[in-house]
Amino acid sequence: MTPASVLIVKPSSLGDIIHTLPAVHYLKATFQDTKIFWIANTEWVPLLEKNADLKTVIPFPRSEFRGPAGILKFVRWCRGLAGLQPDLVLDFQGLLRSAWISRSAKGKAVFGLSDATEGSRFCYDRLAPVDPTQHAVRRYVTLARLAGADTSGPIQFPLPRGKAIQWFKLPQRFVVLHPFARGAGKSLSSREIFEFVHLLFPIPVVVVGQSKAQFATEPNGVSLVNQTSLLELIWLLRQSTFIVSVDSGPMHVGAAITSELLSIHTWSDPVSVGPYNPDAWIWKGQRVFQVRSHRMGDPGELKEERPNIIQIANFVLDRLLR
Image 1 (cartoon, rainbow, N blue to C red):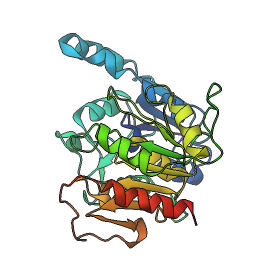
Image 2 (spheres, rainbow, N blue to C red):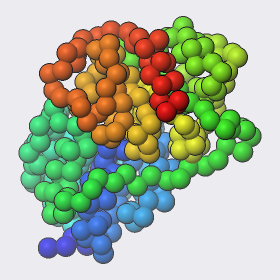
Image 3 (cartoon, helix red, strand yellow):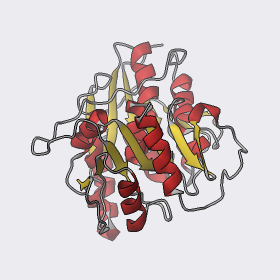
């Protein structure tokens, strides 16, 4: 039975929203007349608002719900969803908060993931059986399949083209370096950033991301840190010759755009959180390898270690010279 409307609950984070795009695309391709709504954190709305698969993006103002007073604001905000009453709600987040949001929409049915936490799984009418060690893309596609979507076609990531940075003149060929991540031990140090840029001389390196870190990029590097919007970052990644990133949301954006990408994993597991692009590259365990060649249990998989910047820079140079 074709649902007239579906509500997607996936407020954050950037990487997780990227990972949910293929599942939602399968839903829309299967149920072409279905109206799909998506609840996302306000800062990620630009990523979705022109997505042809969606009817509407509903901003979730998470920053307004902090502290004791924020709990009451959150409850009031959820009450405002009661008018949606979709045929189906799909909770891709799997937290107590997202389950509350899902139930507040007064949908006819709420589906979630079997590895949902904080007791949220008890709020669902049906559970999609998933393996928590699977990549998030595969887990989310399983939920779309439970909803009736045909998931036999190729994985697609419908992303916007981005927005040109009008004030910045792009080099003819350049490497984008995204060295920052929220997880402890994932980000590159200021010294590692400088060393990477220096080793690529004279190839231009554009450093991007959000950070308060201080680092040098001369003579062949330029910092656009804290200077690009999400759409401008997407545009910049599309124009780049090669992308090097730590395990982060922008890395997943890059992997959805191009295979000319290297993801640095200091301790995180590439199997479950690495780039979902078989032709992209990974640094892990003191070696560089293609995503398609990696298997669970490879040496150094979960060992924490600092990246070998010389090894990474030499690999990038080799790719650029091909």
